[in-house]
Amino acid sequence: MKKTIVIICAILGMIVGVAVGDALSNVSYLKWLSIGGSFGLKNPVTIDISFMQFTIGFWCKVSVCGVIFLILFAFLSKKILDWLKI
Image (cartoon, rainbow, N blue to C red):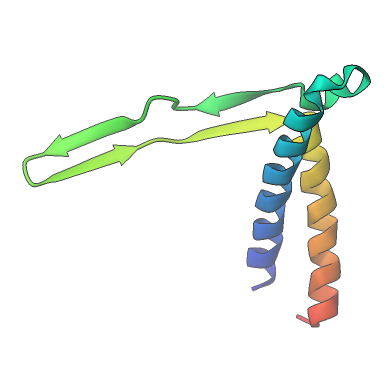
């Protein structure tokens, strides 16, 4: 249960961080927060067999702000675990 909460908070931190970094990319002195890259399959792979079709794709965007928020949310998850007494 503890690991699940930490992982969920870390993923949420990365999502919020990348969104904040993209929003702040228009501010000249905060542009460095949106520096980063992406990896994965932008075009999903489709596997088609006669009775079933699978579409598989994965893409992840990472930025400086995303990593900062990931760390903040990881510490926040520790506080949540202490508060819930788990």
